Length: 111
Image (cartoon, rainbow, N blue to C red; front, side, top):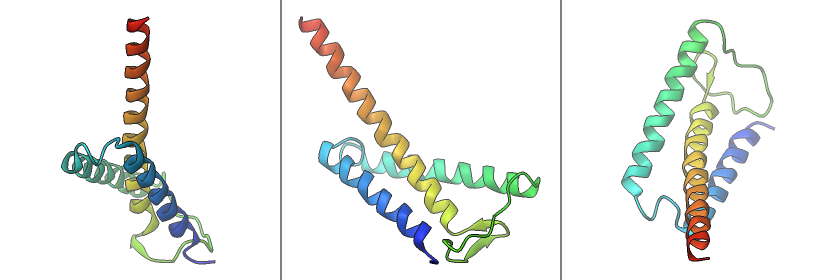
């Protein structure tokens, strides 16, 4: 089913955004910094992919789950969307872990 992979990425993106909004992890505190970080990280990994494609390390396999749009040879449309999701997920996970560790330290200092 074409588009299923992109749909899964977008639904996952929405789930992480809901977690972020619920616990106010990154976007609410620093929306511009978050956007810049996601864009810069995504661009970095797209360049990484392009270098890998140019050297023959990365190739796009055939999958009926992709919509079939290629931004460059062996670079499907889903790839930068996934990379943006990956960068956002990393920010949210980092912020959540940092908050948990901060709370744990605060509890042990008050004990």
